[in-house]
Length: 232
Ligand SMILES: [Zn+2]
Image (cartoon, rainbow, N blue to C red; front, side, top):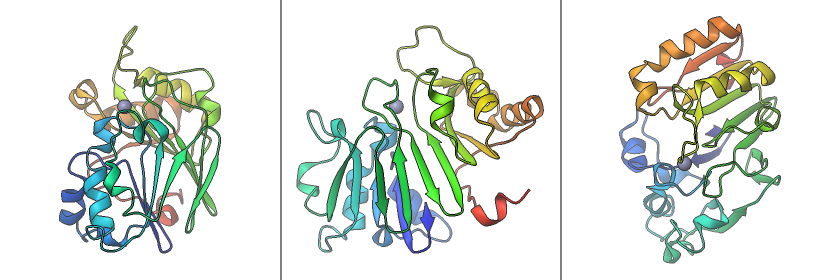
């Protein structure tokens, strides 16, 4: 996410660095101001160490802030201890707290239901607001916690799975959330195999028709311009 001169990388999963370098225009990790982990699962954090190295030019330039839940840092941590001195600050994410990095303000809500400590994020990017619902099982408060004009939502399952041990949202859950939250623009992302087979863009247009809300499916490398894409 880039706001003004502030660059924040959210959830550097496996291949994050390679993707940065291959993207056009190239995203330069040494211009990052921070890295944010919504939770420690490897598909969200696999490249966090590599990205810290890249952001700090191998530790030669102490810079940047790492935001992460406590369990990503303690116990069985995903962030290597020797790298923590490379960044200027390591900030532990907590429930319902507010944070600031350069021109980006954001807050957490309550913990998600997702086995490891997980947070969704509400970003305030004046004059806009953007909510990110990271991995979670559905819980009744969820639609009220994320009221950004733009909602990015991790939807892994096409159909709900009863007693699913991995705890993710399904398209049914997304419907429930959108009916209440009514964001101006919803972006579906983080698809599991059932979503991929169902073609995410078709799922998105189905939701759009059914709910009368703008819903799109994210694709790799997709760019969202808050100034242009919201004017509809
Ligand atoms: Zn997860």
